[in-house]
Length: 252
Length: 179
Image (cartoon, rainbow over all chains, first blue to last red; front, side):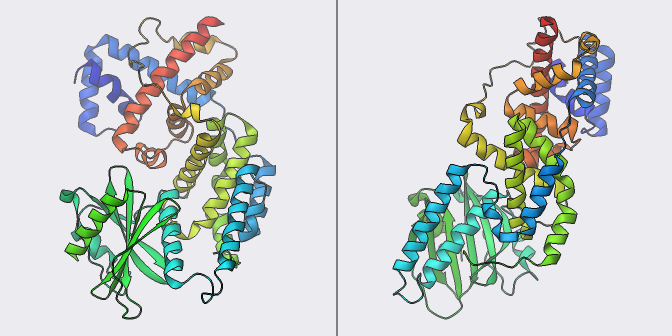
């Protein structure tokens, strides 16, 4: 290690994040290099100064009370102390629009048909998986790790295929809940775009041909094959998503 | 989607037991990121509501890390909408550029208001530097935990801390010499 490497690694050393071998290497360097050893002392002093001198802001009793009571109110909490009145107003307006639209669609049975309802669930599920940074329960690009992970968690075995070589690396898998049942969610990636692939057994044997939809800026594709329902969703462009669909269909 | 969902009492109780104790950590992070009480309170409250909503998907291992991830993401969404200029960081700073005017810890500690100076210097740091410093120095989190919360690869945490500390030294030196 030269001085340039040490300048960064010294922080891992100071924070106790390096392995013993690296620690030794750094200690050896510090013994012989006055410049690095001087700068290490300054870093340590800085760390102590921040740890002891930087204020820690605890939550106020008032905030604690507010949060506790809004949790107690459960779902109605949405209307409690809006942080951004305009955004909430906009959200309320869009809910109103959807409600009106749903009402307008009432003649077709109870509003939205089954496919539309699943599509909406798929969108919510996709957004939720991105929102809480909880894309996958099992993180692996290895299909032989991901597929067995589902065993015992689902009453079916979803086909899992790693498509790294085709440009869609498998990120991992997750359990999700759609159409009132536990389903497999496989997560793939294309550049920065996350692709969620949901799989579950067909509830009735109506074969569905490949069909594309767009919802809230997301592209969705769904189809059925060999007794399974497939839903794909991503903010990826339509062409590349179609390519992904073809690859999945070819491998299942 | 809009139907009333009854939240069972035991879920609320478990949430209160597992997630509420980390409110100080949540507030401290939000307060340092936004730099003001009012926005921090709103964002922590919003984060808690979101956490409660998704409590079902929480696997149970690290409630503080899980909550802080939500707080951090809620704050970043707020920044995108309200202060987008703070999200653009210039990366041209050099890690060795302190040499001209080296950081002198003794000088800092001689200041009667050293705590105030540290606060001021930290607040001048770009968001992404401030966030790793708070998580590391004030919350004492591991690189692995920080990586998850900040949404960066574990290998990036060390280099980001190195740059953050280097920049903090520059800011402090400037402030100390000005006094």
